[in-house]
Image (tube, rainbow, N blue to C red; front, side, top):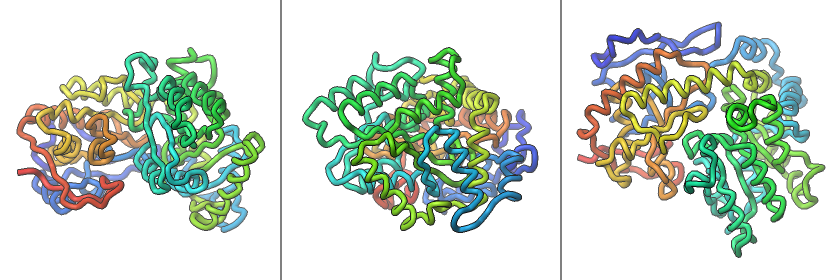
Length: 468
């Protein structure tokens, strides 16, 4: 145990692996050992081993959650690993149909595979995609096709969004672009639910419908990245429609207005792997419906056969059950309360939150630029805070700022993503305590430089060094 452990906390020495079944032990290595790990990893926390070197892991909530007992049972006892015609695929397909209301279902190994397939089918060089917020892999996959992703979040304006829905797309700006000479180049209007690049903030149902309306009016493909659509539906249920629809009904309404949607089962599928593309071909224009036929070809050539799409039978069973569990009110309320609790504790510790926004869905976004105001964006304050968090307390977060997004970065942030059903209140108290110690010595921290830049998605594989 390192000397930095806060004695007033009794931190559980485990993180949940299977809810109600088993736990994974965790340990806090010494500060000296943590410094060695940082140096070995070239100050890139993606390169640090998890449970044996990371005390509390808030790098991502994608595929890192704990399974329920029923998910574990189904994946171990019921999975069918047949290459073609797997019974596990039949169960997953029916679960997706119930969840989304769409009839045409295509499996992929995770969300970024769907992005790649759809971009190859629907995008060409010099095309434009417009979104409330393209995430890192979305932007990379679209850009590889020579397309230009443009973010127009409503957060940039003071009047274009409801205070509780800061993830919205700016409808006024969308209308202007669709009614301009640029319109011919715009091929896709994409909504990400929730908006991960804007602090995991939700999108209102009204905003989804308005975006769909303008997409239809101007004959554009309206697409939804449904990564955390259940969490988004909870905010709609709570803050917009006054609980007049159920969570499943709200989810299906969002899917209904989309021409095509895709989803990573690693997020609101509560699974460790998997994803899907959904549509209703009969409701599409002839030209789009013809292109959709190519999805199967892309899956077979790049993912696997169309009844598993890169997933094992075990993965499909976890996802099928996860889509049933994620819509439960008790689960969503507990998850949102965890995020709100961590954010509240950080604010009390003097930590600024991005745009002083209300708690979002799966993560808390710390405003590293404001906390470390003496470090310019060119020296990566988000990276500085990311490193300091691990050095001080063995906690791993994820920079979302100029390292990850480059010139697209609006704010220098550190994301603290909360894995589903993994950590307890005491873990979050500890994280807040570590931040409190960092706040007290923030002026002693210095920035970072890049020593190896792999190009796109450099936050995954880049090398960094402190500026002396």
